[in-house]
Length: 88
Image (tube, rainbow, N blue to C red; front, side, top):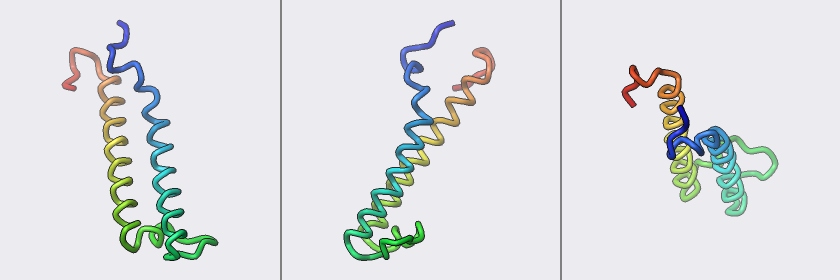
């Protein structure tokens, strides 16, 4: 059985998750350094998201990463079960 139209680009979901999570940390780091809130040498991840507005940006981007990850896990679960047993 072939892929449905909505399943054709699902192989890119893990790549999207990795790239989006990397961008989350990178953008919040750049934003925090440009505002002078953290030391540009080697700050902790939690320090880059400690003050507003970078904390809001960091939190929302992590929420999007969590949604992508949850969707990825549900797609994997649905693809591993048979069509008769799947309740997707």
